[in-house]
Length: 171
Image (cartoon, rainbow, N blue to C red; front, side, top):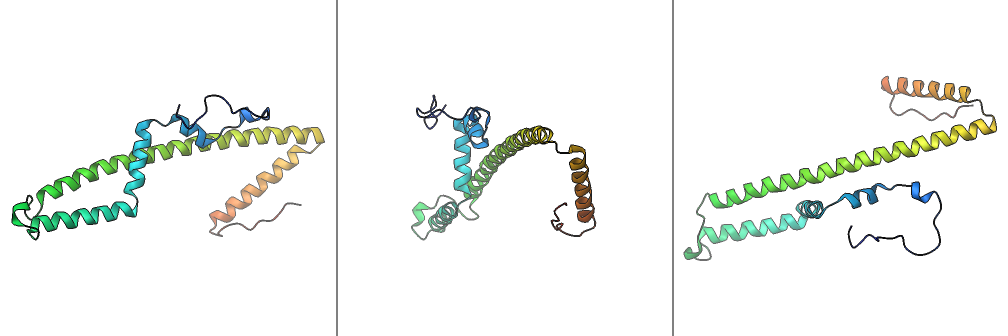
């Protein structure tokens, strides 16, 4: 639990009785994130910024100027072809790629959570629509047949390379 998340619901007017059933992907992920996850995300975010590029350009310029001897020959510590610089940059690339993969894995988890929540929402909506349709006397067999026909037409049009199908409401 982080300091950003209240341990108890905020005092105030009571929420809808349905609010407890609503789940939000960001909240679900935020609860699952650890300090290590936040650190990896922060490093990845910085590594993907122009500030990171500018920092490295400055660092390389200083490194090369020191080791060419322009500042003084006593300060040279990595002669051309800059083997130490190559080692440092290689190690940095290894760690940065690991941080990027960690962040990508978390984004994949987020997509999985989003898909699960979408499924749950769609299922709830479908059950509710069927209940309403049954209560109001809608012919569900005719509705399902119309939907199946429209899906088949759309798939056929997409398979034939017709681009995005034009919307045509069913009479």
